[in-house]
Image (cartoon, rainbow, N blue to C red):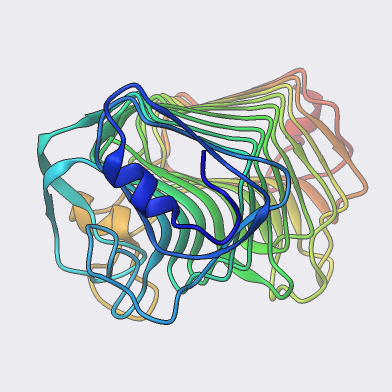
Length: 335
């Protein structure tokens, strides 16, 4: 048990694999690193983690750009990272994955990079946390397998960059999270990712599935009214994806200059240089063509436009969607 104003990190350093650490209510100005298997870190109501005056370098230092730090860094051992180019450093390899760590019940505020990061781990569970004003991300899981991100509240008092991003090697489940006030609510970069029953509001893009991502499932999510501060808005964007299923989602209130859209399906030329280069495009090293994506039983309400497509790809299917307006060429809402 960690009493108020004592050190969470000191308790982790003394803990053994399988230990449960319970943190009392209070404000903890700490940078937390977890690299031991089986640690269960539980914050009681009112347990708040804020940036310390000084940081020590760990795996998450510079993960989302120069001079950025994470509030809670769950990390494997011997993690190899690419140099930072954009978004975050991609994981190249992990010598030993840290396994079976869970973090729940904390409020984490205002870290320059990420409020919670999972890097090079297995069976990590990030549940029931409140993440506020992350400088780059609310939470990111990268180079990991079998990650669960569930029941978290991720918000920003301004308009944050990205709330939740998944760049795993494989197997990520993101469900029941509540996201507000971000440029991108949910960022999907993992093949086979399962994104379900999340609620995203007051954001520019509710769910963005990155170029080249394969066989992700986007289902039963709610994307509500867009933020008026956004330059443009869309509920769900599939950008050069392959075999992604978008089913049973509700998208409403997407408005900006009569051009905001419920669902967007497009190809991406994936330039390798320039101010808007994407991390996924750097990995692909060529154009991403949207193909074999499926859109079924989605509901659209009060959007400028419900469905927009611009792809040369084959096998994309729209069926049984409940909407009113789509573009171009023919009315996808009636299929």
